[in-house]
Image (tube, rainbow, N blue to C red):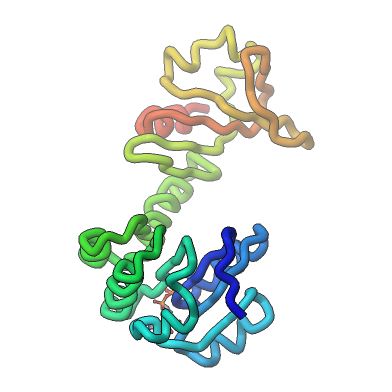
Length: 220
Ligand code: ADP
């Protein structure tokens, strides 16, 4: 009954975030062991994940029984019960799980997880709030800060860059962004190159420093 194979992930906490994560991993072909202490959640996901178990992840013997220490990657998706999240993190580090991801509800929680040695601390609500701010402003259809101060956005092509091959345009020099992909109406997304000629109404993906991406997205 152990599924700790190479491409498998244990997800601890099957709330909204953990469930969504576990489903996406399954859809991508990854085996998933889901763990939650809530019987209803476990029942609801039964059959959808490779294995779902009702258990308390703050107990070392429980984690050992479930062979969580044999997984290469474990995600702690417990948010609101900060104590449980920290206890689980501490145990997984003690068990020497090679890669641990954990969700933090705020900066203080995240700092503690980092101090414990959790390898990847994520802030889904904070990050989503920042991302949605860009969408609400209306400039971009999608927006992602890839790294500190560096972003990717999906926007409608500003008219001042249409009808000229990208290689001859001044977008990079003048606006500091790179057009990495484009979509003509009713055609699939395609990587952009020097010969690409954008048309009015095209959607494009641009990358660059966040401030430059912001400014370019405001152009019409
Ligand atoms: P979300 O906002 O994604 O719904 P929550 O923090 O509300 O996240 O949910 C986290 C989940 O983690 C809950 O379903 C809860 O039952 C589960 N959980 C909390 N503590 C433990 C624990 N010690 N062991 C296993 N699961 C836990």
